[in-house]
Length: 630
Image (cartoon, rainbow, N blue to C red; front, side, top):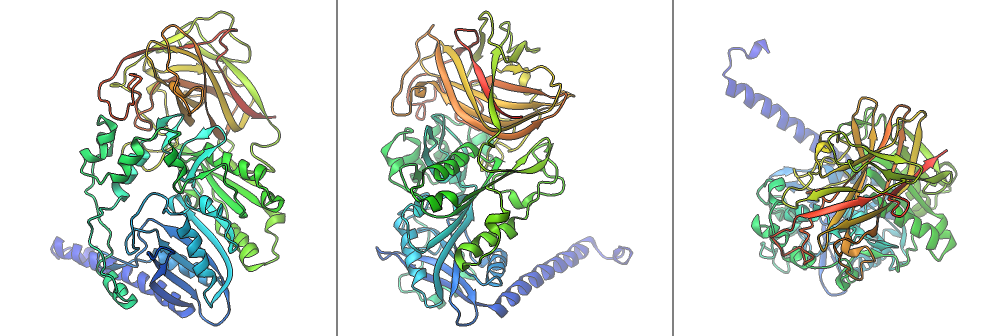
């Protein structure tokens, strides 16, 4: 730096900015030059759908005359090669990796997104767009007729429902972080992560603010040629940018139906969704997958412990494994469960930290496994994928290691029941709440006040996409546990380590003086020094305790059984640790607040303070059932 001592600061900064820009340009030129050597690049191809709407598509395929398999990615996100006057490299890098392996890479925007024509809705409806795209790709002179789908989050979530259409060319899929595409699986009815236990998950309130485009945005005129589109896209990527906002503050607004309107966001799609109840017929008319739909595609599923919908994702894997009509399809379902946040698989490092907790070296040879899977189904390679790949690969936190199983949960995981007990002071600063393998003798219920205007703040968790409102992952909960509206129940200190791997079931016996309220639970690993890391969480709205097809309200003084949506984890509670649960009636803004009125909630601003109780006795054996591996 001595050579810059006599140069004005602004010139030094300018020099460094110039060097940085030149490095970025060199990187951009390098990947595109490498790609151009091996690939035919065909951008802004307008692929026709059956109703005449055309979807913007970029195609990268190997040079030569050989027919090749296709890896297809459809997305609502912007994959334009240019943005803000700079050439972007992400799509080119993905294309290079696929083309050098002998694949054509086809990436496409859902209808109504960026250069695609039509009107957008969540999951890229209609479903026929996916089917029509398969047919178009199959018929290309350079295609071998085998198509695999791949992607994470919104690039994955459409795949299941389209797979149910059973296009003969859809040979394999790799859905990752796919929960928002899961509507109903058995008793779980999240409707694409909109609900959990009948309670709105606020992630979509935040996500739609950044994603939903205005219908009045400029459009490319009809008749524009492919050459025109490529030229225009260099300086105009049709990517509107909403002003940044404080989402933590925005989600405080009541009524919740006006949250997007209050921050000047586009809200037409949101307005439809926020009014739907969990069993609204509209949930079954869009792009969601439901368990009465047949999946006939070999699938390599990827989930993660701190994703927003780990339990529905695992339930869907099991559903296809157990219920697909074709035995070959049942036998060709594989699963990976990583200890990361949403779509964070490949960001694992030698010291993977999720929130505040280190879970060790969580890296995995994802690329090798995925291409081996695709080679098997799209190229017909007789490789050793099926011989060397476990049915289920899952990462156990605490022991910090990858493990293998033939099913989920592991066959040797047995449910062990722990009953709640206390002297009525589980909500005290020094909680007397315990978890025991024997039922409580006498009933001394724990009571707490739930004030929707003073909810329990979300601290970490299994969440994504909420901006600055909630940071996902494991965080120390002990300061939060000092609140009187959180009931805490803990085992004795473990004299030997225990692995909990599978679905965690909960049955509470509760009462309230409100017509309706919510109950929440968290599973916690308590370290010897008192650090209390959250593992998973769930919630249940009391009015839906008898099913999502009816609302049954509470009566003051009556005690009701309340079964919560299962939680999921794989965690080793080491010797000296303790197993803990927290129970409350809010986890905000992870979930919307129940205003306790018994009304529609979404259009209400006034709240009722509820006095809620949790019972534990031989008559009311509130309990949690842990899948413990011996």
